Image (cartoon, rainbow, N blue to C red; front, top):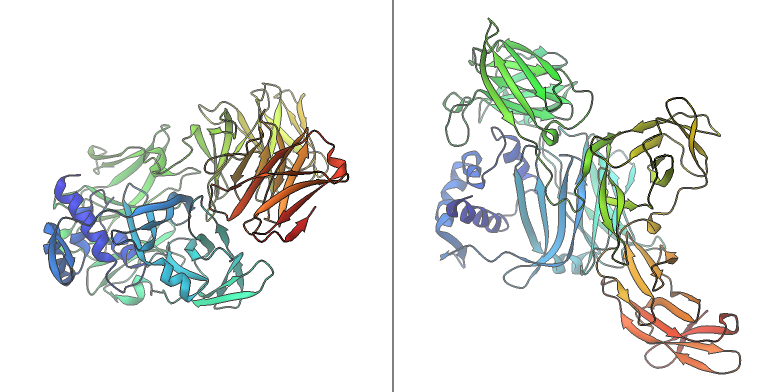
Length: 614
């Protein structure tokens, strides 16, 4: 990216925040682009003429009080950690975080990567003001204008006292969302994933006891492109897809599957098969889920998509019936995988079988991935799983199995070493049991239900992955080798995520050899040798462990003092400190050689009044 493009990017980010427009406006531009958008300067080609004219002076500076200024504004400074979450619309990670802009205003920021390499980032307006008005607020959505994605992810911010977020749909259903408290963030971030066919009308934010705190209307909504444009010809079918031309304001081909829009190609005569710089192109590809389709040079009679593993997918190719001057194509669906993540090559041939052109797409690795894959990424339904290295609370690096599920935070489960003839069970993947196994395992079955599962051997991975569908809860699983001899038996309930996930933010040393970590909403107390002691999902008045002469725990912030009070009247005052994750907790620890059986742990407020006793 050159200096001009960098300044344009910053200017567009800054100026975009001054318009009261739909959060999906950028998605309209993104869907109408021709090919992967790798340069921010290319945005101007797709923007309305009036807005382009407005943005021209921004290339040389910015706006302040109606005057042109020199240089882009400073980038907002992050406040707390960013939440990395899977974007179901693009099957790529996206980042959500709080920051302070150059004026010191707290804002909600997001950064999205589109399949094919394009990206978009930006920050909203005053988040503190939004939180003053309501307990929670809507910031944005991954919903596309054409509603081409099957799953939509809405997101926003909420005050710390919000414990539940629920989407209300037009048809009367309720969809529960997820709440996250990134380390150091001043407020929570919420997400709700729901089918694109649903229409969300409102969001409810409630306290832990279910008390309704706020209800916010979701006003964002756009008609599909086909309902905004004027048909300019009859539809034609290719494979299982349908495509139809539209006009006003632009000549556009819109592709659909059973009435659901998948993507579009802009086919104005002056821009026909040209990139953002005006250079001629051989092909304009669109990929949506397992479908690949688009337009190619008019002399193209046959097309192939060659995957990185050498497998070849063929396309149905035919002339456009509207005399636009292109070939239409719709490709054979791949059995699995993500074409852009893996990388591929498109090849076009003439009627005699001679190669006319070749369009190479290198592997498009996700940005912002906190857990780089070791070996191949495996798709299991809508989820993706892979091996990576994770760091435990005591600083040791272990192998881990990571998972990315649409609309949820990417997480990794650490596990103890696994030998060739061994296996481990990890926290369930939805309703399915999942785990890792050594090289000898080739098949797996649930003992009680008799359900057979799958064993995956990812290329380049250190271990295998086993999955048994719909077998959550307590169950035994038998793993066998190719000769059907038992390799390992894994029993019991699935382990809790708290016991295997890596910590979020810094570990808190309590001064008594104990350590407290925060991860995935759990608080875990460790001894000085790294041994796991206890875990806590929900923050209560106080939680602690007292053993081997060490007291260690945490309490709500109103707790100013903690004591060990023994039956003989003696007392030991604990050392107090604030938590480093911004959860509003007080941490405490103390040492005593007396028995924990003969002691109570008592918490006091700042005035010395007893507020809890355990």
